[in-house]
Image 1 (cartoon, rainbow, N blue to C red):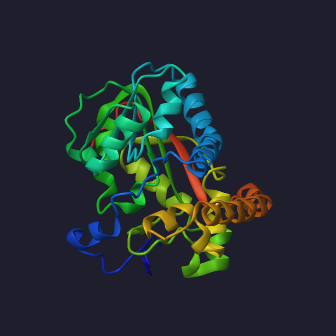
Image 2 (image 1 turned 180 degrees about the vertical axis):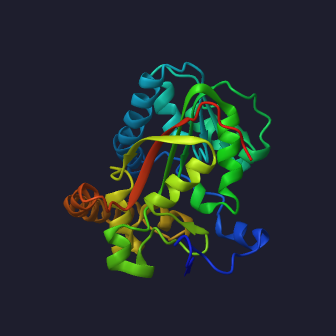
Image 3 (image 1 turned 30 degrees about the vertical axis):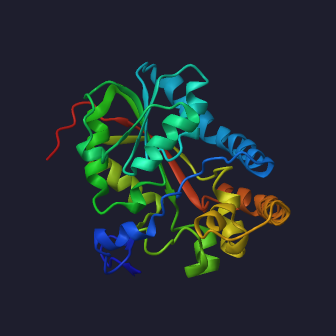
Length: 289
């Protein structure tokens, strides 16, 4: 990892070739519940913590007055969009992974397409919101995605982006062991000011900045401390577990997440949260250079 002397942006160097990088994204990189009790409990937990994201997006939509569908870029299994749809909004998912888009359709009833946002066959100016949760840090060219989002949004539409915060206490304390680093999948590591500069250059004005995520901040610290307990990491690595062992590890992980909650609330209150979520709107009269 290197830091630019001029702009201070932190990035991976050298960047891996795309053909190599895709090997680090397993086919089950997203969450799809199985039919056992433990998986159902895990889905209930995910629905609970995702309410934080849903509330942030719904409040942005209420203020904007935009009425078009919500597009979630990097939708994975589609649970977030399912929660948005349950609140009466039209939704569409997009993911570069065909199995992920299929999982969104079949497991959560969310329409989804497999494409890159910069080349997606979508109509311009019709979406009330474009959301990108933990997407920009994975991209070779994040400006291309933000330019595409600008074109797809209604005039009063909202862009919602979330990334790990490289100015967080967790990164300061844990260094390379912080889960937000995630080498080699994270090509870029943003601070708040980095993201604000990027959004400004793409024609967006920042409306809100939030540095606490109930889903991501406590769980990120728990995973950094005990990666072997993380349910998603265990699933990706195909760790053999009985139902009893799986339940015990999930409970231990949940206890660690709960223990991490006070610290993550304090660091976010001090503007050093481990994630940053931004609501932005299109700047009137912006002309792309």
